[in-house]
Image (tube, rainbow, N blue to C red; front, side):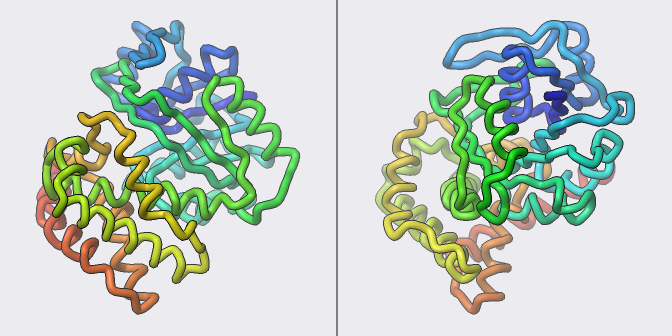
Length: 312
């Protein structure tokens, strides 16, 4: 397949590099110093599973130069979604498939509203990775998993084709007929640890074993599960326990990407990762006190980061 990675950060850069190493035709969309480093030195992956460099690596900041592709892996920050979709439109042909690997729960709808829902597969990923320096991606977790599926749960030739292509990366790929459930199950994890991590400014190993903070974390997970249920997506009955067990399995120094952004004073995914739960909770007449508190406490810093971003 001819593949474009829209957003060559920790997620897109890592998976795109694995696909390129496997012989797929991959072009990375990047900008600034990151783009210059990739063009000059290739894309270097520093992973717990071994280091490698994709060199030369096809990279550009102008998607119009690429032509139509078969697959777009969409991995930008959620607050960049609409601008990034408009930028990527020149590569989208009649049969192009878009697979969003973003943190939120509404990527398919937001992207599909601009390019058409017929292009969309739904997906989610479990990974701990980040850009360490221009042209360098760090991958810190033994796990790396992607779940993909058609929105309606059906089997289709294009779903099978994307599944087989992604499998060449060596990553664990799950073909799901309940993809919305898988997305919300992952979201229960990432939303909760993002909220609590940003509030505590501590690594996961420093807050998950504190009884009071652990109780707050479990309550946040339960709120996400309740909101999912209000939207007709029933998560497993033991979702709090299984998510807490997964949190316990993560490296103790882990910090989710939203927390790293907040601590650095950058724009974060606050609206898509935390604010969305109180919003949906109000629509479903559900109380979400933990996420209400987290959103209220984190919003002032987000507004300051937005002002700084707008001036830059």
